Structures are given as C-alpha cells and as structure tokens.
Image (cartoon, rainbow, N blue to C red; front, side, top):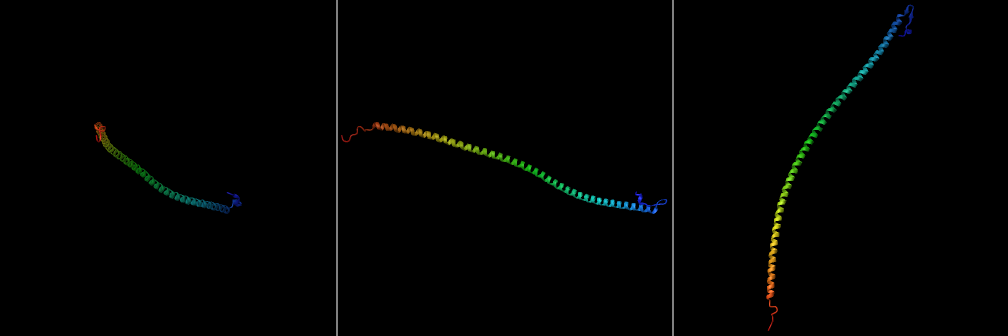
Length: 163
C-alpha cells in the first residue's frame, strides 16, 4: 500500500482519501480479478477445445485401430486360407504323383511284356532261320554231291560224233 497517495489530516489520514484509496485498490483488484477470470475462461475454452480435438482424434484413432484390426483379421484368414490351399495342393500333387507313378509302372510292365513277345518272336525267327539255313546247307551239299556224281558219270571223254 502506498501511503503517499493518501492525504493526511490533522489527526491522521483523511477518511475520504482512505475510502478513495480502498475503492481504487478494490477496483484495481477487481479489474485484475476480472482479467484473471477472463484468462481462466479463455484457458478453460482452450482446454475445452483441446479436449474436443483430442476426443475427435481419439475417435479417429479408435476407428483406425478398428479398421486395422479388421485388416489384421482378414490377413490372418487369408494366411490360413493360403495354408489350407497349399496343403490341398500338396495333397493333390502327391496323389497325382502317385497316380503318375502307377501309370508309369503299368506302361513299363506293358512295354516289358511287349518286349518279351518281340524277344520270343526274334528267337523263334532266329531258330527258323537257323533251321532253314541248315536245311539249305544240306540241300546244297546234296546237290553238290549229285553234281559230282553227274560229272563223274558224264561221257565227256567218250563222246564222239561219228565213229
């Protein structure tokens, strides 16, 4: 308190001056209090605006989290579906491989059976050719022997025309 501003009287400070001083101080404090209240109102409004912004951001983030969880669930389902498809394809491939092996074995057995028939035919043909050649050989020897007999019996040296 600045007492220099209050006027003095004979017996101390003048009553009017003290009342004016107190009223001035009250007005100054009231004004400061009003400014503080205004600042507090502005701060409260700013805080309320910030709260609304944060609540809106919170809602947006919750929605984003919900969407991401949905995507995560879809990805998990896709992975499980892919695994199931892979297993099904693997099983189908194994079954096709087994069927192909069985078909190859059957075809191999058929080819072996056909080859055995051809081998038997070749063996029979060989035997037939061998016996035919042996028969031809015998006939050729027989003809050669007959030719030798005919040659020996031929009158080539005794032939005379007009004797």
